[in-house]
Length: 469
Image (cartoon, rainbow, N blue to C red; front, side):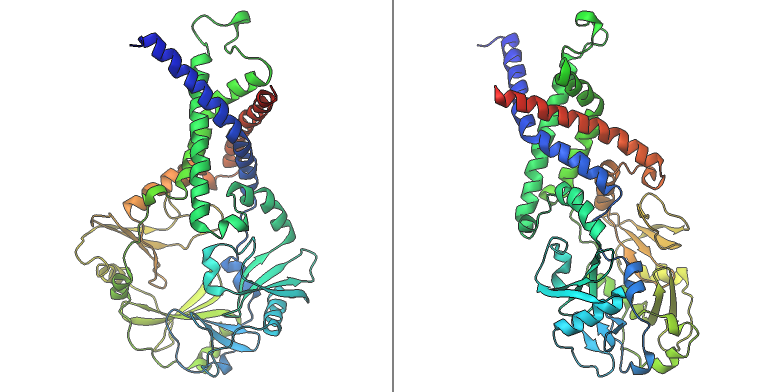
């Protein structure tokens, strides 16, 4: 039988071996994650924001809009007239489905949207910037390059004929140094979502083992109060090993938290999966009826009509509403039957929301006039004020409602709110709204990213030297 000291010695030996070889395999990944994470602080992955979408659209030609509005669709001006965009794009003038978007239509839409001449257009299924599943409903895509100094490329849906993404030359360049390596987001891998997810799980899992084992060794080898090493040093190492030991200890906690939260980002074992209230529950809240006839020419006579870029019909508690959007922050809400501006009663919205979870009680309601730790955006603004209703159902659901339109904005359960802390809180250091307090957040992130990068790069040097022996 092995003695306790013998087992302890063998355990330490395995600890060193695990850290050495997993560290050699993962230090390059860790350095890449830290450096690319710093880039992502300032350059996000390309997307078409609502502000950009509305800025590129032309005002709706109300005189050529005919027929009823369908819930779940958007009315906007296309290159050849007003369109209803939804699962299927229809002409708002004739009511007929549009054929697949051809090259000529895609070029016209892109040229009008980007205010420039077209240099080239090609039909693609996906590329580096459109590989995500959120674009599946719009494929195939026309990739249209415009003759602009910023290298603007627009992606036009082959199904709807609308612009779904814009990218600029500078944005694309920095993303090759930011989001693409950080998320291991190469098209050939990301287009196979299950495979990509497994790659993230296993690479980040290996990183967790490497960092935690390194911190353990670092604690075992440091001498702060007990008899120090020669010369009064707290670390027995010199050169690159000293840098690795000291900065691994200083930044190890942040490194561990980042890698663990990155591992959680793909929801291992679907621990945080939560679909929320289903379509039937939300339909009870909307209480949709028959679409009312709408006098579109009368809307065209309204004072704000000349600046409206998009319009949609929604139902709230049995009432049809028209939302007329000029910019993302300015929209008019009309009663679709009377075309009069309407103000919704928050008390009625609470009563309607009870139908979503009829077997649950309302614990309390909050009227939010400023962002809080759950309703916010790291960059940009959120709609305010909003109404938040807390239910006592098993999932502890919160329902957030727009008092302007009555729309359900989010329905997070306790499980999803926990994920907010385990991912957003830890991965982005978003505690007590720190992420919105610039440049304090920038300095805080730079400190820990620098420590992590030094620890990883020193590990690369040590690993290369080890492999050469």
